[in-house]
Amino acid sequence: MSSYLSATWIYPVSSAPLKNGIIAVSDDGIITAVLTAQEGETLNIKDIRYYDGVLVPGLVNTHCHLELSHLVGKIPEHTGLPGFVQQVMQQRQASELEIEQAMQLADTAMYNNGIVATGDISNQIYSRTVKLSSKIYYHTFVEVMGFNPARAKEIIQKAVETRAAFQPLRATVVPHAPYSVSEELFKEIAQESGAAADSVSIHNQETADENLFFEYKKGHFLKLYEFLGLDISFFQAKGKTSLQCYLPLLSAAAKTLLVHNTFTTNEDIAFAGAQHPHLYWCLCPNANLYIENRLPDVALLQAAGVMITLGTDSLASNHQLSILAEMKTLQEYQQIPFEELLCWATQNGALFLGMESELGSFEIGKRPGVNLIEQLEDGLITNNTRIQRII
Image 1 (tube, rainbow, N blue to C red):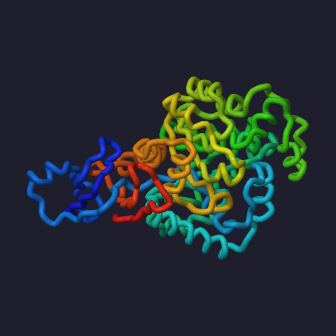
Image 2: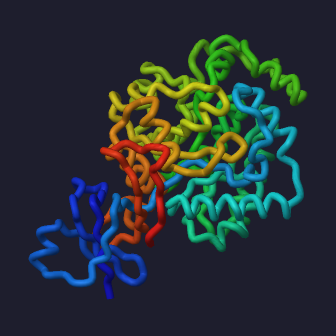
Image 3: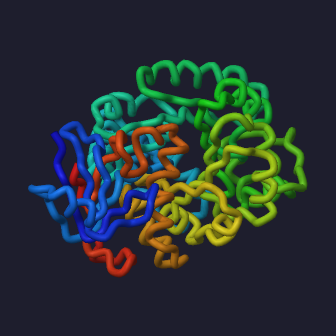
């Protein structure tokens, strides 16, 4: 049996918005019909539940660090990325109970914020229990790091074991960032997670110092390596941006998510497009403002026609885990239309996670979840705009 839902506007995402449209949803959440107001009148449908607002599919968070949820409010804003990384390393230790309780609260908050699927970075197995009981679909990215080439085999073996421990949850071995992964480790990762069915992520060009290090072996990362006690005498400046150095080391077959992109240039985008046919570009604007107090040049990505997704990053670098809040920030700073943002927050994210047959749009046969967005003012997300999960 299906329930009929209508609203001021329905955004199917895969097709044009419907004023006073109607969707039919089965008891188990499957979309059984998407109708215009006129089609609803013709069919003489009774018992339609009407909402004052906008109905949209469940949102997809393609980049999160659930494991860092216990660090909420503990790291000051605007430290810059090297300083932020150092503080995470200094403060992330806590009891497993504290970490699990914080993750549970974060998972519940994401669900209440209309998120139906999350690409989550994990360095340990801590999040498995929370994910197994969650109403959210999780794809776990088992993140590896190791800048010492001699340890590449040892590190990849541990990551493979962690990936196996996450079963039956879907998990992929991925690199942390260019400045924390050696070329040898990149090659090992490409062998482990290089198939066309795989989804891979990497933190990309989140700070100007990342490019500075790869081009000239200068900048604040040298102090970070010193703090970590790492001898990087083996590393030689490449004379190229970080993206242009590492992207050829990743498999071009796998879907690959570049996260943050705060200091990515037009030349980098062109290089990436020529190098890799299955790229997605994730924006986490509130985390960018929290850490570096700067946003990526989104207009460059839009002009290039690339696939954009949205993420929240972690509660160590954000005040909330809300994709709607990320959309609001992008509108405030970049004046991006709501319909375009919604596509990034739903359909594109579902495609990257390989969940497009079930999530991302109101289409017959899918089970995307249904959210109500209230007080959207002429397509603008304001301080009064709220999201409520309906299904």
